[in-house]
Image 1 (spheres, one colour):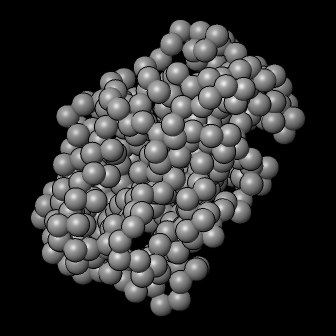
Image 2 (cartoon, rainbow, N blue to C red; image 1 turned 120 degrees about the vertical axis):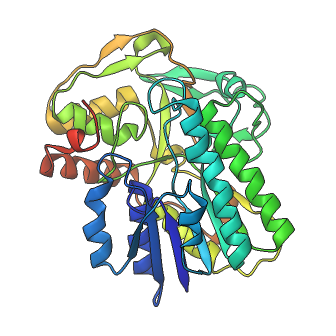
Length: 356
């Protein structure tokens, strides 16, 4: 099987490439990356050693996409991943549009031309901000928790948020680009007869992630805690009770590997892929873990709200479990320890990741 991965030198793309090569014999991978993300250059040598063919190119340019070799599948792991992109830092709104949406049109044309299947790595941030903010929550110690004492909104259960949760605008500029990509992928696949899989991921996390305060929060928090960098609990009373679940890209690779081998010609194409309740932590709980691992370092409360922040997002991957017998294998203690060991071995990692 021949595979193209976009954003291959980023955290998700490089981890997917390595994990898929381990899982699938005879796999040939070509990766393309513009190396714009701070730190991405580091992954080039490791990927070459794994036998990945690397192209330095920009998928915003149709000519660069046309230079890609024919493949059986394309995995799109390239995007500006910050929910604040286009609004506060992370480039302008036009750059966000070009990075996340107009570039995706070039990838759709690639799949159309080569009849290559398409896997889109999407995001939990396609969901309606109003619906997420309106979830019934209760304070459970130092974390928010879903309150199941009354009726829950459609698309959410005690297992988390599923694919049927509302996606009404606003979802953030970032989220809207990912949601538009989902719709376009399904339409192109139906119109031009190539298979499409969409995986809406919770927070991806693991060693080697280029974490910042706006993206990759588990990695950023652990590295910053160890280095005694200033940390803040932003919004929601400044107590750090906001909760996210975490998924390692190796576990995502297991789901994608199953999808690449599926012969289904129709039916469900969109899946939620997250760590779920067992792999969810609040910032305050993550701080407590870091305190035990590295010694005490207290974040400062900052109750001022920030655009697009949400108190609780935990993903329900029940559809993927049912259809692909898939579940995350790397659980939170192992995931955090992996990041911590990497942080200890790489004291320069925040600077490499572009954190000033």
